[in-house]
Image 1: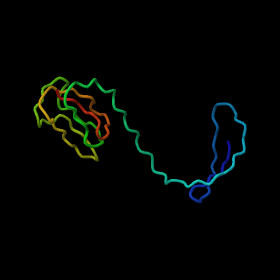
Image 2 (image 1 turned 135 degrees about the horizontal axis):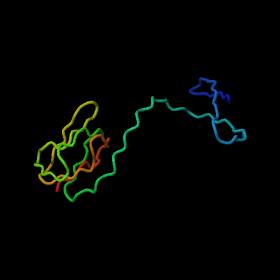
Image 3 (image 1 turned 135 degrees about the vertical axis):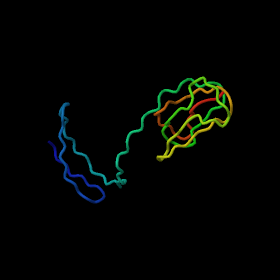
Image 4 (image 1 turned 120 degrees about the vertical axis):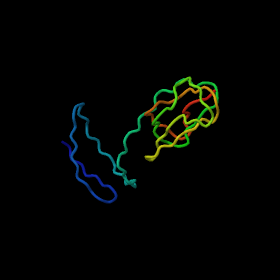
Length: 127
């Protein structure tokens, strides 16, 4: 068990750190340099990585208007959709947002239900 004094925003904290496994490392003196500390935020839940994008079909891409969770895909790949049909339900800030088809054609999804997407991510193409 090793003991350290750590200064954060002018407050000193005594901490003990237990080393588990690995080789012992020789102690090397290090010059202390004051650094302005940024506020510490609570750790957020790690976002689920979007699955590997399916090959995008040739056609009009439909981009995500906001970051969020793909809650539901309303059609299957290869289905024919009409302009204005709701093709995806995107959840952002606990609200469901329907994403409508901008054109008629055959839909090819580039995402799946349960995936987190960023603003501008290609959700599907309509050819």
